[in-house]
Image 1 (cartoon, rainbow, N blue to C red):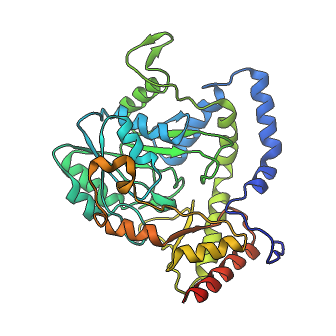
Image 2 (tube, rainbow, N blue to C red):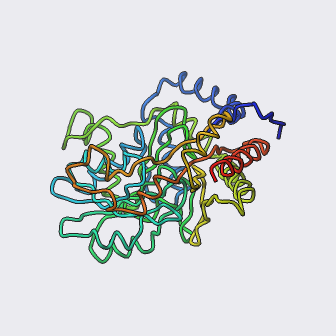
Image 3 (cartoon, helix red, strand yellow):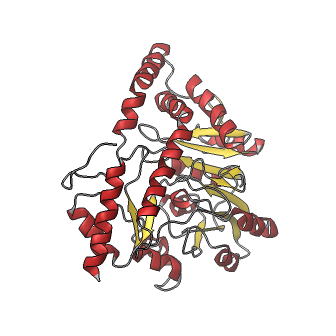
Length: 376
């Protein structure tokens, strides 16, 4: 831990230290990949799929080009399309709903829980109709969703469950890792994620042989063998260089997750007994803190003070997906999902990454407390 002056900028995310620690392994993997001359769906990708499946506790893992594709291909493999409805959260990155629309189905937004920001099962129950085909819970910020209740709803109504695990690799729910509970799990390896590569990448997990085979066809233009196509697919393949770095980083993931949890613990301790509502730990599992997201009164003023102090933050998310212009046709009105809408006015994500200096954490908390005092 090094000293930090009050004028030193604090980035929202700093991956440079992690890169430096992995640089020699990473460059060696690039040289080895280049010498072999196999760059797409080669031995690194095949090995990573096996290692990933073993880690998550599933039978199959299928590497794809990005997290968005992992959701879209899951929907396609489950046969979801025109005329179908998929229940999901409005408090998430756009890709969760976007992929439902891309598949030809209609996203149906349920409200969220005020503490975890994950789907509220009680709200989900009110959204089930004769057209509902699936539920897409998002393990937001690294907090696992209420999968026990969600799986119960799905079983009762014979619905598929697509877990959006983009922000939650390594999170546990009742002893099982996210991505091993629903029909499929979708992961993103965008560089900011708990397990991130140095570009784009994604993964689908499943216990189903049929889904596994279907997604493997879909990711490669619907081909059953070279130049023989059984359906319209897409081009969604993880390249060998990204697979190589992900294999390296997977070996270090326990320490990386522990590092995030340690930073979160320090924040929570220092923001106790303030107007800040810190993220709770799940009573049914573990939080991996892809983001450390607080609720705070006068959020915009607090964020402005942090910005002026050269402290990076992110506003996840400023507007619920149900009120986005692209979904005006679905006719949601302000007030229709009040818990989500309230969260959009109060949430602020603070800097967090493995190895974040303690002095940075202390400075962030100091400025937040100062900002709250100024807004009273």
